[in-house]
Image (cartoon, rainbow, N blue to C red; front, side, top):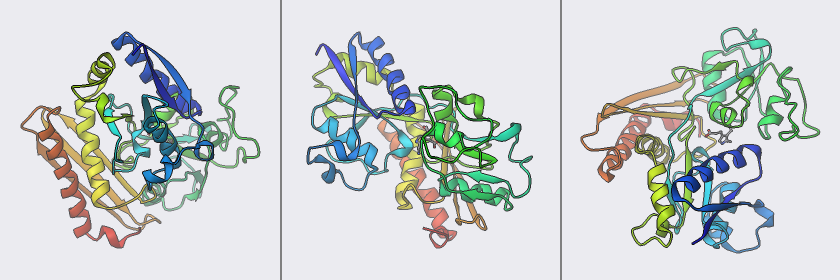
Length: 333
Ligand SMILES: NCc1[nH]cc(CCC(=O)O)c1CC(=O)O
């Protein structure tokens, strides 16, 4: 292999994430790479999409490109990937996670505490809506869509003046007091200036996998008989065992609750000094009831060992079952 090919979606966030990963892999492997922008849903001509089932259309298009041999790797935001891994594809590396928190991006430097009564706050995420209403029942939550610059442009003073990251034409502007986004995305594309408060996970728990990336490929690229050994070594070096163990617990919980990305559910794993802690929340859509659970285990083995991942999965299932015993399934989804 001379170089490798990496697939990405075309948004500012996707290309930035993918370029960062590909640059790091190129450095360690000593190989060059080519970035391929993958057109979404309707542009894909192969039959592979349908067979992938139940995933977001964006992940599906990238996955089809891997399966078709059009690219060798794709970089996803881990939180956008469903908990069940499709046949023929493997997460070959999970790099070190960045800031897991949600970001309040408000006008005039306002915070969750100082937003005026009845302030209008935009987010498309039921998880954020439920937890914000639990903390501030007076807020008016507004459903919003679109890429990061388009969302920020809903708040006076947070319009982007960068031509590379334009807000969508025709979307409302300046009509909200604040929007909520992931810190990770804003930090990665250099729009952290818009953040007025990084929300404490004690108030708003992030989505399972938030702040982490997943590098996906065909399974042979992770194996001992890899056709591209330099790239395989670079991937192994780039993988972060502590992050993997955390997100494994979070995704096992998601999977056990059989909740999709629209469920008002948050989860956060933390790993340090041999201890894995998992915090989780399930809330009623209107924030009127919030169930929280926290459990921890001691990992007797190195977090890179398969036994550590097994223990992490068991912890996720245990916390999920504790939430179900508390009535989580009666709340919402
Ligand atoms: N659902 C969209 C999405 N997927 C990943 C991120 C941000 C990056 C991350 O969480 O890793 C975002 C934007 C957001 O939630 O604000």
